[in-house]
Length: 30
Image (cartoon, rainbow, N blue to C red; front, side, top):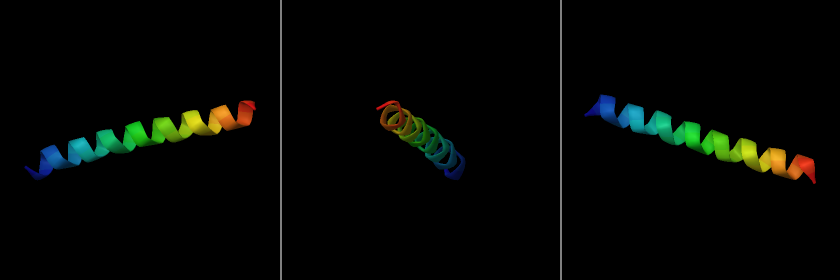
């Protein structure tokens, strides 16, 4: 159970990081 939670948490972190990166790139391009 803990392992599944860790994997989903890691996935959420990656998605959040990608979104943040896209936002920064978008702001930088303007």
